[in-house]
Length: 114
Length: 121
Image (cartoon, rainbow over all chains, first blue to last red; front, side, top):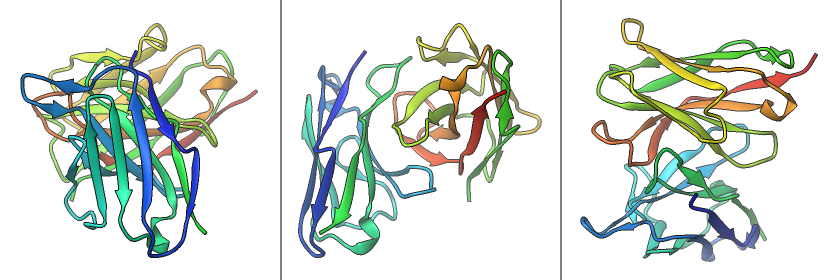
């Protein structure tokens, strides 16, 4: 199984400041034949389902504000929120889809306002 | 727009079978991969399995002995059955769509609102 390890577990950032969440996979999720990283980021607010933010490690889903960006390759990935807004308070998950039959998620990072 | 809606009993007795249905609207169930994912209270996300519109399935190896996912293309629905449930199966159960139709190797772009299932006598 590919284990996804997120850090930190929780994070408090001031409004307007940058928030950075890390995700490390236990093996590479970069598929060499197409040079794509099979990694996604989701945002989950209380009482709601996860919402897809980023796929292929750095492609923003339609409608997602451009303050959200994804980066990284191979085993190390980062989700960055460039200027934190109040509505960004949520739990963020990374997920690999490099291997099936077992998609795996990180344990989540809780983002709060400082 | 595409919407998914889970339905089924909110309470299941231990050792019985959990049965849920996901109704797809706004798009045909054909040509996509459809998944079930669950989230125990206060915990993270666990993928349960997927089904393709052709009927082919793949399951989480940790659950494969207890899981069956099926679909009814005439109703644009797919279903989950999880047998021999215990308290550890208490969770919010989500249905979700894999983003592109031709491959399961993609992110989940559409999710249902989720349904809470409690396993208790």
